[in-house]
Image 1: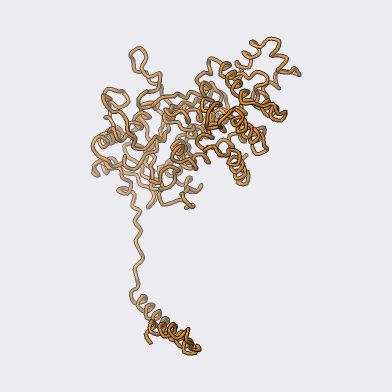
Image 2 (image 1 turned 90 degrees about the vertical axis):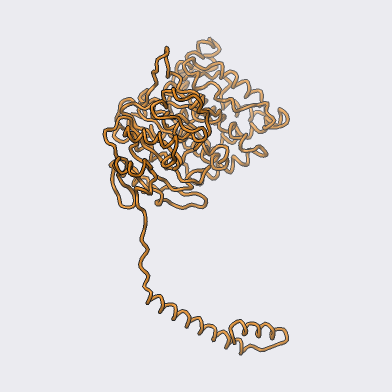
Length: 530
């Protein structure tokens, strides 16, 4: 199910009406957290309905609470005790006995009832919600009023989650996009436009859709959209354990969002491995074991890292991620992210990374890294996109596709910067634009003024400069001007102007002249040269 435009508009209007005076930045953590808890509550309720066989959860819990909770944890990775479900909050509101302490107690209980093997997936996932925060109100009553508004909002038909995981994920994705749009400077970096995500996912999975097991990794995972979209093209998507999701994120908000997003899309907790750390400072946790470099490798790696970020590049020469290529400059971490991705790529894998165009032609340390990548034949394709596709930047970006062990040394250049739909404040790729890019890349096609396959010799002649216009000629010759026809057109136009002026002056002469109009009429005649 895809949410209709009418549903989306109504949901966002209701949300803004509900939040009152609370800023969206503070509000987002609560609305996402409570929506996710509602999803977990309903998932637990459905599971209980299938296993209780007419018994009530309250009755089972009262007989042996520890055993009951352990059984739910074993199956779901978490437990919810009686009176802590989302519906219990709504019931308390309807009976006029709700208080803010109920929510504090619920999440306290939840955090104590996470399965050991699910700790990394659930631990701290609700930390963005502070029920004693002044952001919600000056006192407990005011804070409770805000929570009541949110619970009632999420109880409306627009937020009905009972129609399946597609509905849940549609609602969640819509809210992520809307918050990212409104809070572009705060949240925009966590959201990759779905059109670019789609291009990357289709390229990364092409020819490998039927693999029985598939591991995917995003070292700057954000909201998790790149992982989810890539997995969506795998034929074994719905088979438990077949696809493993890995990611790393240094900021707390997207670290929470990504785990919520994956689970709301139906990914089981034991298939999720999201780490909370700075990717460049802390390599994937199981890299060096007993002094031996044993990095985890992935079938597909994708990333949309922060562009030209500053990083600590001091004493990095011996880091195995960069040792063979060189260290990226401290004011531009683009190649540090790229090489991190490449390092964790399986020998038969493929990676895609979104970066600013500067990585294609900047010199010094970046030029040396680019040269090393090209001489190892690891850059397979470069795609240039239009500007204004992203929420938090108007600059055009490019996507680099790399493989570790290519025999071929050529590079496919695609200039997709001219094909898009222009919206009010942004540009957007249409389905036909996406299809054209993917077909060109997958089948390595050369299309006039759109794509070109350059040999390594050509690239060397260009001093390893990969700027797309050097290889894809998009110049359009202007049609020759017919000077004679243009001159004739000008003569005819001048004659037409002269005739119109004469006609206008004739009309002025027919006007009755009064004291009020005399000056205006005389001035007008002077303008037209009479």
